[in-house]
Image: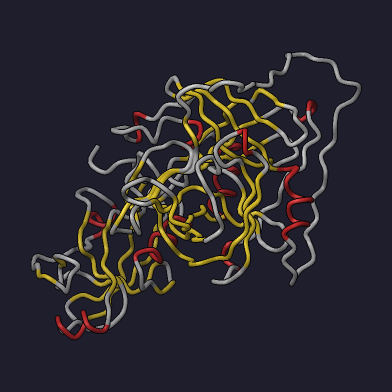
Length: 402
């Protein structure tokens, strides 16, 4: 995305983006402020019996009932507090399993939003606490974090709180105009358990998580009001299922104020991060090592290309999987409209692993579903002829050239 700035909503730090900007959705406080209290849990406190998890059922389909969504799902939404880079941080999250796993954003619990921080420099915070709707707070351990999806997983002792895990839905079933509910803690614990509603305003967006060089594909755009502190909170569909995790907002370029446009990491990415982080503490991603430009009818007409769809290879990472497989961006460069230089004689990727690709986000999403080491057939057009190239995917680095 280009043409403005985005902001992370769990640390008042600004990154690149759309419509003036984007911000991460958390709040990094300078101090606790007058009258602010912190609930502490005494380790080893006795309880009469171990609490049990509540099974969450889907709400009736076809009806969007915001009051009922809040009543039946807010109990599974939590506020996260931590100390990161020496400062207290508040964010949102939700219970994702009866075992005590809690999902939030990676930028809530790490120093990734800090200026100048790159992937290998990212460090986790400390003193993690999970604050529940009933007023109870539990210390938490950090299971791990995935910078590429901006998802982190914490764990609390399930014997010390009756948990109500939320269930995942599918962002791929959403349509523009579908209603959404967001529950979280805008501006921290003073405003926790807050509900806002809106609709899906766009699908298939990409956002850039902090500290890494790869965008998160398949992102949900919504007009539901979300603010600093909502980071990591659930975005729910009409059935009360988690279809996204609030992560960024578009901000005004002069004031960092929200513009009414927010972005949520898709449920599929969050669910994968949860599964992989619990199983092995890391999330592997495949890597193709190519930058592309979408082929339009006008681009094909102007440069006499053999197809009017697909992805023009515009750059190849030296030593990456695509270069090793023989893909090329060609040698010729030319200006096209107002988008800068392109390579009109480069290979044109028509399909990846049998699936047609027409936008760079299509390719990014397809590669994200593969595993490092997979050998994938890629159909290309070169010199007017259709060819099949097999590429052995690599492991995605956090940063290119570092």
